Image (tube, rainbow, N blue to C red; front, top):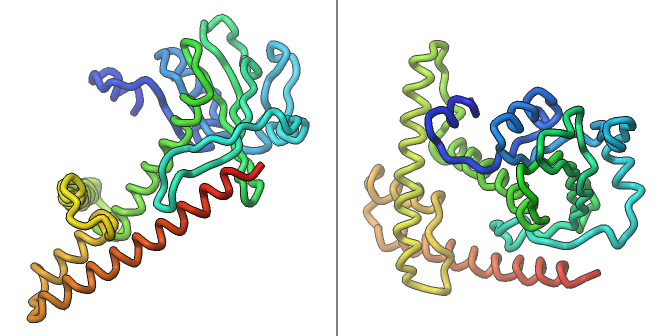
Length: 254
């Protein structure tokens, strides 16, 4: 699929993926052949080659041996509860695989949850030198993709199909994604002209709810429904401010 997208002229500088792809040496090699930088999640038991591939060490063992000074606190992007801060460790030129002449830079990126201490590991490669900030940004991109899939499932029933043929599945999926696109466009248009700073911006969830109660179903007391929508958004705005404050306080802690 990546090759087909590139052959079709789709511009791409990075690929981010989960462990199912990151643990595949064939997949990583294919991206390097196309000179596409990647930040791919790998399992904690993944063997990381060092010393030119002569030695392989488990990713979690490498993390356990790191000094406290190796970790930097950075945001992986904005989340629903504020900036998603994690501690990051970056071991440049550790992962060399079996082809050190590919002209790129291999590295291992480790993410640590600042609350639970849970670790995540990423094999990275870039055709040109990159910064830690760039790799952290790419690692965080997957969150928005996963959030979009979750929205498609919960708001437009992407996972509710009961079909067995490819044509039927394709029609159902296309219709569901088209419905999600309508909701996303409505939310984006409303966000450009916010009417009340005390409310959160209209979300895909709230747009879908308003369409249901104002258009699809016959509601006599429209003012009552709009009042409840405003109450929900105001309550969510207060909760978001509280979450942001908590996140920032955690970020300031050593």
